[in-house]
Amino acid sequence: MTVDYAVFDLINRQAANPFLDAVVPVYRDKLTWIPLYAGLLWLIYRRMGLRDTVYLLLCIGVVIAVADQVAASVLKPWVGKLRPCADPLLEGRVRSLVPCGGKFTFPSNHATNHFALATVLAMTLVRRWYWQVVLFLWAASIALAQVYVGKHFPVDVLAGASLGTALGIVGVWILRHVTSREPVT
Image (cartoon, rainbow, N blue to C red; front, side, top):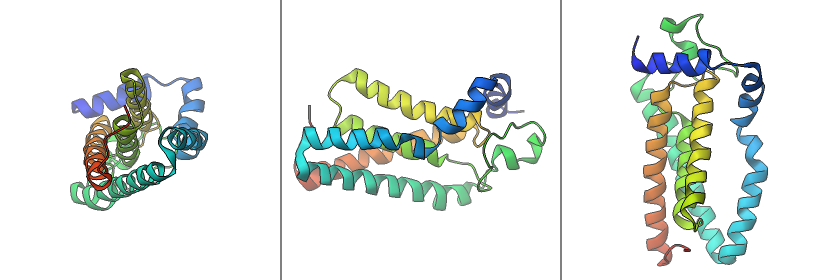
């Protein structure tokens, strides 16, 4: 058994408890975060004004769309790594708290998309380093939740975090060159 399988087992099975089993599937669901996204939209508008808010929202939309498609349509089929719930080596040893979804797992789209969003916001909107840390801890907690519910292996979320961060950096670089503006500091 590889380190990836061992860490997966530690998070998915050994760390299991009834409270987390009830909370984590809801926590990792994208619809849970709609109030946060609405609050962020208001904060962005208040801080940046309409024009820059539109530019930033376009940047976020394009970065997440590219991140999602690269992860789901390019890398997952190319790598072909099976999800824990579809891996014959783990049959009967995976606690699947949510539906298995597609067959392939590498990289995690949840991790890719949330790290892309955290990166864009950390580089454009957030002024203080500790709020930047909070953004990345939030993205990391969503990624870790994917392992807990049995959808991904740890290496899948690490790859998604790396991909999302890289695409977020590229997106902000393009945004700054298109708008010829420095980030809010």
